[in-house]
Length: 277
Ligand code: 5BU
Image 1 (spheres, rainbow, N blue to C red):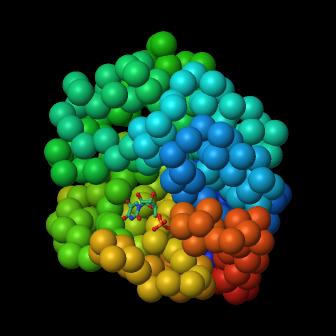
Image 2: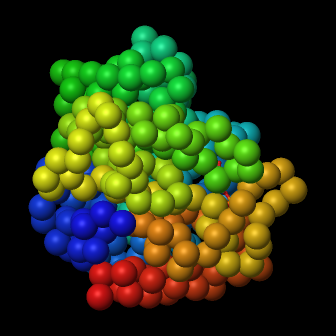
């Protein structure tokens, strides 16, 4: 567990060099929630309806924008309005994984225009360091200025929750190395535990280093699914170092999603209070 994960979100909000991370921790503190809902529904109406109903209880709404059957500019405009109304951030779980030249075009511009509406994106480092370098370069370019001013950040997918995941060992250690080298854009990791104690021969921990940990595969009612997903509870995720817990079906497929999100919010927050106590 890193020393920063023992600090309250409010303290981390004040000290962090990245504007988006400051906003994220300030939202968590103000709304008393560390829940990210993974809104994996397939129509714009369902997505916007969920965002509006769950909005008061979440810090972040995670999308897979390419699973919508009726994606249009109204989808992302609607999302942006609800993010403003309820004070949450949008995380597009696009998992960029290609050479630098390609991911730059996939992120900024293109059919999905992800840079315009997603505060947070993620990438795999399977292609090597160049993917992180390329996305960081895009975020520092002149025509990115309006988005940078709002706050944008990258999470490195350092581990996965699925059975037999190959994102382990050297892959995970290199994730930490690249995060350290591109701290101006990399805000943290998607992973299943705090990575701050990860030993690397390439980089070492710097004073004040504070990477945000998002942990997916959180579910209160199930241990997994038939396709290899493996779940843990909000308590165990937060105790292992998650700053934000990501839950999808446990919330949106519950009989009453609002009642469900309140439960994840309450349990995630309680676990956080215990960690920082
Ligand atoms: P679920 O319904 O809570 O199982 O949804 C989990 C979401 O998190 C879903 O959108 C996945 O694509 C995403 N996910 C994951 O489950 N495991 C991972 O390691 C990563 C993302 Br990275």
